[in-house]
Amino acid sequence: MDFEKILQMEALKETVATKEVVRKEPTALRGFDTRAVMADLSAMENKCTELINEANALKITTADENLKAVNISGKLQEITKQVKKKCEDFLTPYKKVTSAINGPKKRITEAADRAKTIINQKIFQFRKQEEIEAAKQQKLIDEASKKLQESLNEQAKELGIKAPTVAPIKAPKPVTILRGDSGASVYTQSRWKVEIVNPELVAREYCVPLISLLNQAVKMGSRTLAGCRVFKDETPVTRSA
Image 1 (cartoon, rainbow, N blue to C red):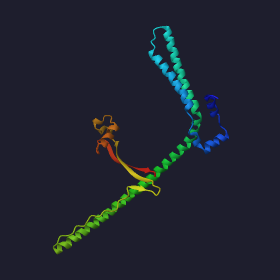
Image 2: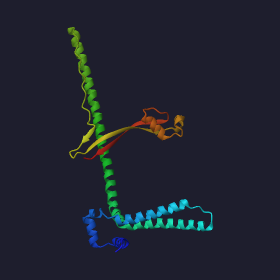
Image 3: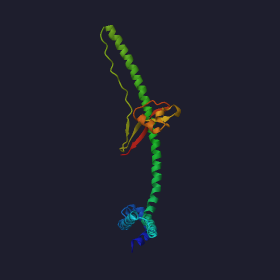
Image 4: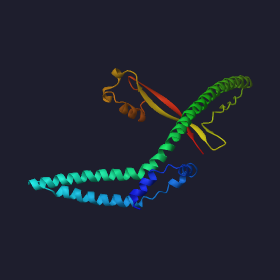
């Protein structure tokens, strides 16, 4: 039995047994043998190379040579059709498998990405709230430290001695990288971005203006650009274990 018939039979296998194997043992399809089809393609490539060399060397000065050129062109077209058909026939059974699994893959990954974005935004908002609370605590600590220093200064003045300096106290800062029990972590990635607000005010050196040039300027350290809003963008990023 030649390879073409094997391919035809493979493409027509829609039995319950075949479906059961694909369902239970998808790994069985991973190691398909490409040796035969690669041998055929190699032979076609050699023939194609011969025709290309012949076409490059051909000079058309007579009607016979013109007819030969037409024949070469036709053979090259036939090679193209044969290669496409050979590859399509060989890949048909596997396209069915990849088509079947790409649907769930797309649904699952897109749903997971949407949910991850939502949960990361919640984590981000909680961290921002923690930063606000930390800033409030720091303000209270600074006020208390100031009052204590003033009190010590007054007491020291009465005693005619130098008052001790109250050491600065820092409120606990929110954790920058959150780690879960599973080994996963979420952190915030920050980068400066630019947004064109009024194109007419943008400097002529940025032409149209080109956002790529403005981005490059921000990347190089510019934080004020006429006609633009330069801002710091913070994005939650997840790393799995």
